[in-house]
Length: 412
Ligand SMILES: [Zn+2]
Image (tube, rainbow, N blue to C red):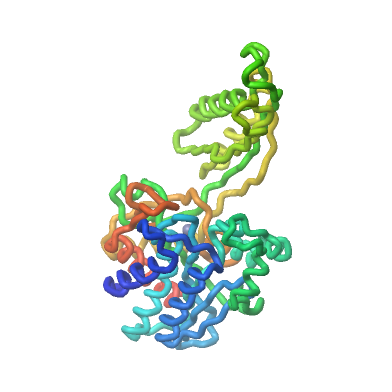
């Protein structure tokens, strides 16, 4: 079994934590921002130092490739994203990029024989924080999103300076050629290591999550309609308060979905309230409902439950519509077995786990054999500055990735 360098991993974690450092222990590194471009520069510098050839595709995804002994074989890729949410942590995404870099650096430093060319990747704009949607560039190159529509995506925070993603891409200097996209002709597999972003591995005392896929989900918008009236003059019994109705609707949804298997998860994370004025009874509320589960039958049952919501709460009519949904994604069985075998042979504790969040690997898996490795998130935190994965656990995950890449290289 091969092992990577813990010192080199530590050095990379510390170095990349500086690009977009907030001063509060985390980073804000929106895709294609000055900070993100600095991180890309560091990636390119370190990959060039081991003789990798570096290209970008038309969505600015970056590819650093070292040659193998058989040049005509397809490439094996590993990677993740280098962008973050606002006040995010030092591990989400970037640890997968560091993994890919460390695998290539170990192979180069120890002159480990390998046949296939090996590629370390940065996916552009996975978070979609500044320019929605999430998983933007893997979505474009895997045919999930229309590129023209994506280029027109307007920045949602002042940091975008009113620019669209397309304008930011053109200005970044990282827009490359469409022919250099990850594709099923030139690549044979893709591996992504990521922090779990949940508490399960830590609670189960496991170092490695062997990810078998990404759960299915549906996202609904639910509306309640009331009547706007004066907060001082309208007796309670006369009111049609759309916010009270929304609160009761949310409680109803929770009570009903609580009856389904306990690993079903459901969230209302966004509420739009009209007119949102403290002296006016709200007349319109629109809220999100995100529901996720691995088993399509459970998800179907949850959907049926949601659709059974009362037409009226507190004298306010209730309506709903689907915002979007996606089927569960199952990763490649052979690759899952290799990840599991290597976790076992390296002597790490591990478990099979589903991913609740979406990842670039999920879009790639429709195009190429793909798998993911999870490492524990302390207290389950992510998308915040407290996000943390111990060096030992990061190192363990990277060792699994290294040996899995070398197994693919040997057998595919
Ligand atoms: Zn991520």
